[in-house]
Image 1 (cartoon, rainbow, N blue to C red):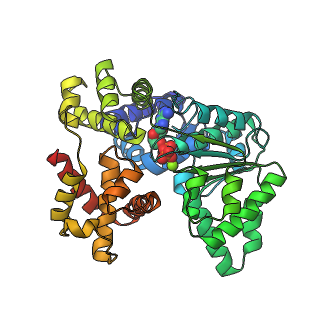
Image 2 (cartoon, rainbow, N blue to C red):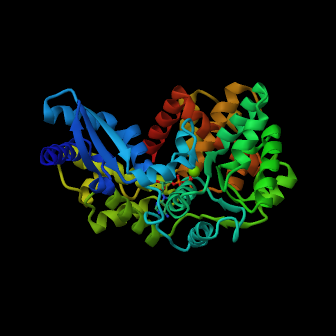
Image 3 (cartoon, rainbow, N blue to C red):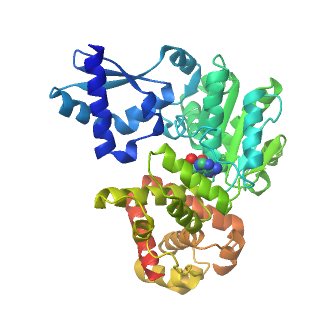
Length: 436
Ligand code: ADP
Ligand code: MG
């Protein structure tokens, strides 16, 4: 019987590799089939994080493959091994908080260190070894896409195995604020406090979203004090250092900075090359060295974009059924020596595409017809040029850097929820790419 299951499983994995290579991860080799009974192919995973990844992203592909191979209407179930299942139950991830269900790829092993992130990574390790003792709170900050969430998840994975009895809560700041609002509405503050104050480790990602949220700040302040008093570990991240977070009470800012504040900066070329290679290994992509160098040289400021480029090259290689080499990568990612985009070019193309005058984009006018296009322009200038927040502010009619930051956050948040806006921004970005 086991033999039959094993054979089915090998074929299923073979089909996934063939038809859905983008889903495949190195750790798939650790999955093993338990049995196939009553129409269910039961698959054991090493931990809850792997099961959740498979459930969320791969279920359909696995079911299709299993049905193809067996010729029967089977479903597929992913279950973690018993031990880690128990550890999971004290690991309180909020199911509605999809972003912070631990990502199985975000481990210390998969994190590449270099001068730009060494302190942050070392501090994350120290937190795992002595939670609540060494650096409390640990405050990680840096621009988007440089590994803050990755490091927080790495701490989570490590604690899950080294401290199985710990109660850890990992959450985004937005979810925290939503819980506060719900608790206020439904009169369940007591439950809320129980939830956040009776834990061994509390990680809150992207605390810059506390800006202007007074009740959220108030609740957070008391949560913070309680946890610190009992030497429970706090881990916070933000897209800027504590001192630059705007509209947050001073007493909170000073607490944010009271432990260790570590920044993640854009990685240097060598680190980027190492990251591209590691990402390729994780995704089981055969990547020649010159292609890794080529990709790493092109994307300087954001590791997420580096990874996106790798995935794009891989997708083109699949589509054309050609192995990855330098000409293919150049074809997939466009001309290597494109001139950088300038702010005037961006304004010119944006003004035509979004139908607003350049003078309005640069003016102090605050009507929505002008504010939204202006915020989109600021967002794209930040994404597509190397200009600092201050420089961008100066270009856009002498606005200060917190206004620029606010515009960037507004657009990147709204893009998550509003498909129409996302398409408009992506469409404009494509036009700008062509205008280089
Ligand atoms: P942030 O939270 O800072 O916006 P993330 O943690 O979401 O960024 O990272 C974005 C992507 O870049 C993730 O896929 C992450 O794995 C990857 N990444 C960032 N820095 C590194 C690194 N040093 N080594 C490996 N992967 C990295
Ligand atoms: Mg993040």
